[in-house]
Image (cartoon, rainbow, N blue to C red; front, side):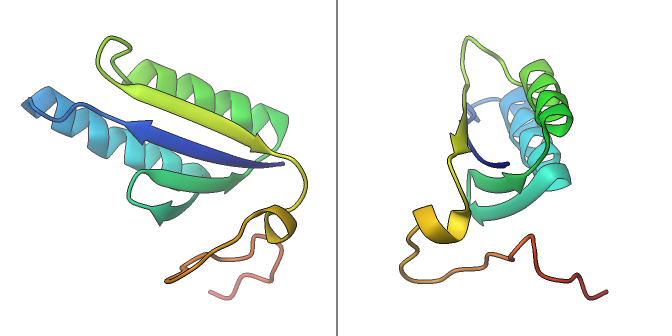
Length: 96
């Protein structure tokens, strides 16, 4: 399934800046950055649970905001992109 992960981390403190970096790294482990605080991920149910668990363990629920949207259907059909797009199709072959 495709999910969209968005977050807003309070960065006024050193701890907040560290949380921001950790949240971004966790998201990179599961998907690709499409905007500064927005990631598209293609995951199964178990991976989604791992992603959610890791992110919730990282954020400060009193200061930060985390949203995970399940995209119904394929990204190609439901997402319109205007301007610069750095997306990689998860279903295309991976060339290393």
